[in-house]
Length: 331
Length: 168
Image 1: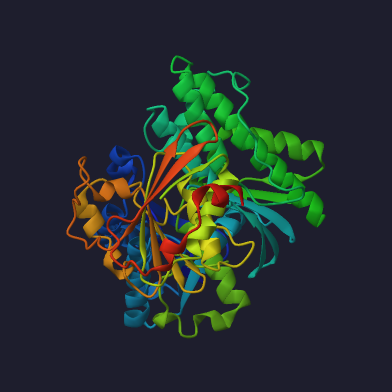
Image 2: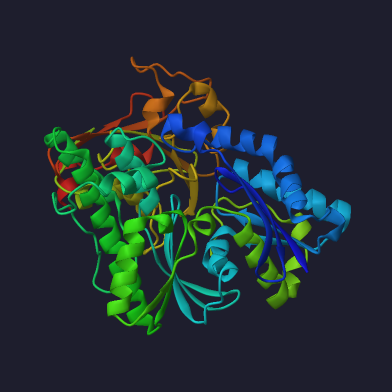
């Protein structure tokens, strides 16, 4: 069975062809970072326009690299939300058009389910497991009991962790995107130079809050303009990583689930990987990270989630040709 | 109307009082630098508008517009990422302004030139302006400016004395 995955929820235009559940035949990602770097973040109007220009080429390339034609495809999976509406619409409408013209079943995938199942492209993880999805737009803790059986345990009450990285990078004049830049900068800095606040919220809460940390870094930079940027980067990163690690482990303990998957763009962060692996080992929790290529937005994970959705909830294809893109799609 | 608050919680309480006075179709423009408390103010306003307890207003920097349901729809808009008037006009904000809900805009600075003239063709009157300024680590002054608000019978004018508000 061949699944064509399409993803355009934010600033990556992506298409992938997946054979069966995990044999990836192609995985094309057109990254728009260069277009947005000047602005210190994704500019929705530019993103939408760029998707329109690229989507057909990207799909064509994915088919060519996989050595298949559209007529060979058995299922189309596309991101329905959440994301930027002008970006989502491009992938979704392209997918609908292909589904109509080739009379193919179509499933709409929640972008977060894509991140949650990305690990299955590498190896299957036994259910139930806890998943921390951490990116520029999300910081969510989810319990997965099976395919299409998920429960939200906690999420950010204000800024997403990745957004906080972008904003701090901008304050320090380091450029965009903030995650990789700060990660690199932090390696030569002292992570104990500044003790930034860690927000754990109420006892037992699995929600996150990063807005206070952002403000605190801003105040610190204003008061100590000569402080080494590497030290501020390392100290800021330590505060984010510590909270993410501790909350993820707390979720595992509270739910009595010894398996943790960390996914999403920020999961590519080297310090987060190091911290989660070391702390989970101490706590007898097994941890998985998809490889960086599957952590950032990609269509392989959408194809993968689509495959499982179709297999476990065959009704999902009913009416899907009439579905709408949803910017705030709930989990 | 000028208020001062001594903590993020007080800023949120003031927001709640403001929110409870709002009507469908109202447009609120928030001004203030990073860390001034715009998102906290929005959380309060949304609570005052009847957002379900335990629901949180998250930063819309990524999705640009977040929609919540209170007594009527709440459109939380963030212009942080936008640069030019053209980009803002391309957003279709007129769908959210003066609609069936309340529109709350963060980083409204982007809608005006340096001498506070609108830089877009978007209709921005009538509007309520909320200007948040950082006075100390936790102190903020909050100016609720009704200059561009014509409806003198609007419940916002029944807002209580600032000093009793902030301590409530």
